[in-house]
Length: 409
Image (tube, rainbow, N blue to C red; front, side, top):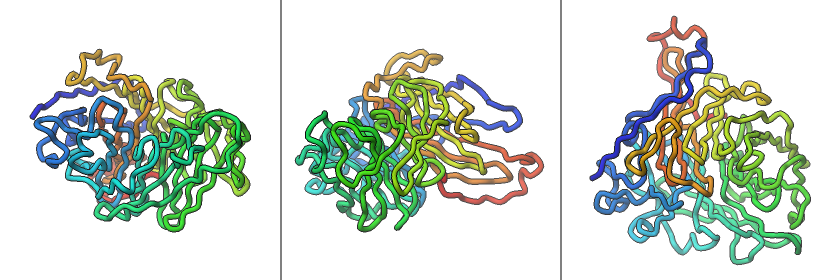
């Protein structure tokens, strides 16, 4: 078994001394907070390992979806590596504390059989329902519908949850891609799923955990959205494709203006459509794409990853018009390629894909902590612990009990 050494270097420190937030590697996870591509860990399920190689994380653009299960404290990782698909489930269950692979979700190859990628992204509801989406490079094609599949829990069999109709689009214009970005919020009847478009402005919202209904929010552009779509004002073309997350509510959507732009946008979903707000604020780097949002100790935070170099950013979103950058972390991964630990150069992620997910949020003695998991495709999974002392926490240390909190909103 190969063991890689990973050192995480803080490139920018605390934003404010008063709050004294910290972002540190979750050292129990993988090796010093990093599950490196191809590196097997002691205890990994046999079906995910070949010799000393872990098959579910590689450098061939096959891993783009990662989600946190608040019910089990596990991660679900989606891989398209054909080697693992031949012997085991492509939907891997990783321990949220250690990163060790404990097995896979049930897999039915006859069910997952459409789309450019038959499975690609994953999201999990507050009650532990798992949703896995395919990727369609052109949902206008009858042979490539966008679909979402559902697992009631980590032990259940999958079922088709939603299939987006391919008819009704305009006869002119280019292809319409769907499924690169994906997020889930709520549970039961209040479950909402988002998937971002490329080729038209906007996103698809899927509502409900049973008998789900789909609603497209899109600007009027060629090809025209199908009948029944609702407008989204002020949206730039394809801005929801790579970076998308729910904000504080199921009606609040955060996204990047463009893959290479540093501007964040906020969209509010209403009964007659969606409105893109002007106060999204500016992020640090153009390559920030995958993102996630959480409210921790009453303060809203946004975490992102720069697809160009695996740098992880944390923002205080108390003022959405002016996100405050708290930290920048770079990763050094000598097990893959020689890199400069200051520049954080990593394996190329030319598709700018991946996932950022907050995990367990808890409080002890006036200090809130939140786990953060970052998958930058081709560069493994980084895990962090984000700690935020509340006002007066110093006087309360050792006095408070431990309380568990659900992720984000």
